[in-house]
Amino acid sequence: MELNELRKTAEAPGVRPGPWHVYDRGIGYEVHDENDYELTGGMRETFDKPDAEFIATFDPPTVLALLSRLEQAEQAVARVREVAAEYRPSIPEEVLHEVMKDILRALDGDGRG
Image (cartoon, rainbow, N blue to C red; front, side):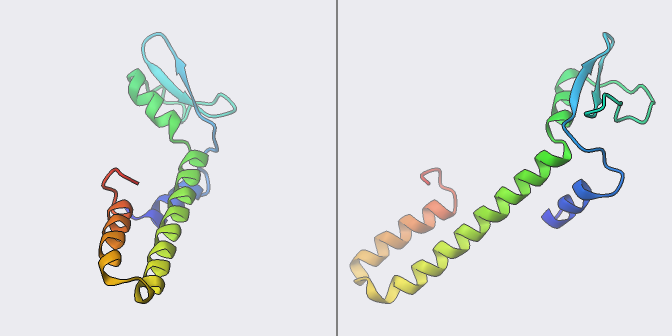
């Protein structure tokens, strides 16, 4: 699923706003919205606790916040790439090679940056 599709899903009409929370029915767990209504449309569907916690954690506001942070991070990476390209002609070749390797490793997620 593309990020814009995730955003559309989280913002779709009829999606119950968060926060969502887990409700223990004694025989399983339900996910309820901020007004304490079940998200299952009254079908009394229960989940295992880890599944209910997962669903409740990723309510629409949380998904939208994560998408916004991801978009900001992608914009920052693009800007770092632009700045690196702008400075490339002014950096001595012997230094440039090591600096660019470090920058690219950090941007590509090698765990160092």
